[in-house]
Amino acid sequence: MSTIHTVAKLIGLASAAWLSGNISALSLISVPAVATVKAESKLSNGLAVRIWEQNYELGKSQNPLIALTSATSLGFLAWSLRGLRTVSVVGLRPTPLFAIAALSTFGLMPFTVAFMMATNNKLLKYAEKAKKDDLSVTETGDVDGLLKRWTFLNGIRGLFPLAGAVAAGIAIVA
Image 1 (cartoon, rainbow, N blue to C red):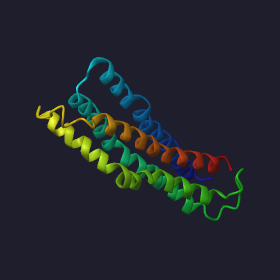
Image 2 (tube, one colour; image 1 turned 60 degrees about the horizontal axis):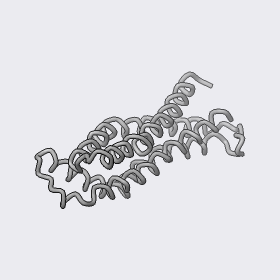
Image 3 (spheres, rainbow, N blue to C red; image 1 turned 90 degrees about the horizontal axis):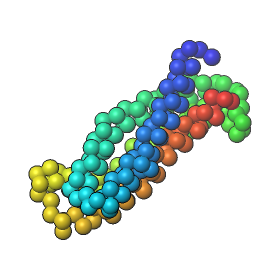
Image 4 (cartoon, helix red, strand yellow; image 1 turned 180 degrees about the vertical axis):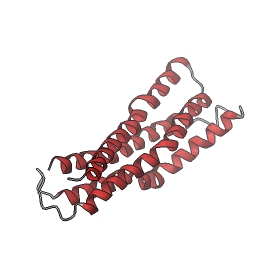
C-alpha cells in the first residue's frame, strides 16, 4: 500500500468520525442544554435562537469542507483501489466499502438541504429579529418546537458520516 493510500485512509476515516461527533454533539449536548436552561431559568426565545444561530454558523463554517475532504479521500480510495481483490469481513471488496463511505459522508449535505433548510431558515429569521431586539413572544411561540425538530433532524444528519466512518473502517481492516 502506498503512502498516498495510507494518508487518504487516515484523512477519510478520521474526518468522517470527527464530523459525526461534531454534528452529533449539537443534538446530544449543545441544543438540549439550551432547552434545559431555557426551561429552568426563563431564558428568552430570542437568546435561545441566538445561541442556536452561533452553533449553526460555526458548524456551517467548518463542516461542509470537512465532509467534502472526507468524501473526496474516500472516493479516491474507492477509485484507486478498484483492482484490489481482497475481501473484507463483511464479504465485500474495499472499493464498494470506500464508495459507500464516501457517499454516506457526502450524503449529509443533500439531507440538510432537503430536510433541514425550512427549519434552519425559520430559526435564522428569528435570530435575525432577535439581534434587532425586534422579537415578540407571540412571534416565537414555535421556537421550542423548531429547536426540537432541528435537534432530531441534526441527530439523523450526524449518522451519515458515522456510517461513512464505519464503512471506511471495515474497508481499511479488510
